[in-house]
Length: 274
Image (cartoon, rainbow, N blue to C red):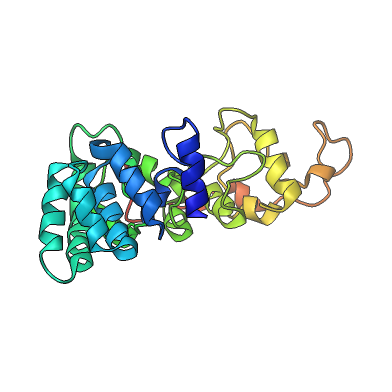
């Protein structure tokens, strides 16, 4: 497959092959080498080190040495390659330097920079295929709140358990719920509904009720009542009319009459606060 993608890329006019920079973490040395050579210093150090590691693992030390001699890497990556090619195990040297570049402490320092525009850019700039130590980021936040955490939690690829722990930072679910499914939708509903920018509270609740992402028990037990929304919206859609003229299908739960402090749980997680 790699050879075909490389051939199509060379025959076309696109800046990167189909699949983009994700090929840097592949076992296709031809694609990895071509990406490193064409992107050059536009790639960050982590991306360059990852590409060099895959190149030496699947293409051999001679291929990495040839790339380093062509002066296409940044200064830091070239220095690391020179050190890696000296001993018998260049992959271990590259791996160790890449791990230092991706260490949680270094990522946290970048997230705390005053001039960092937003946290998602720091996370999105990490090389493909390399895991983020979410537990370490949460621990750092518990010691001192991280800025831009809402941007971080909303990124694609954030593990579901992390999103569940910080569901209050997720956007409000729309009529189709949240992309993660019922668990995320229910957990986010605990922190209030009714402020969705693109749909009225009635529309916002109808969809999850019809599809089973939420049910009446969820709304009574978990969700804070949307401002200006009658408890009638917790009835099943089929049983609801704008002006009911017959007796209600079932007595409404007295939970709606409970004070807000009893009805709406606090965030209570390590990422709490503004």
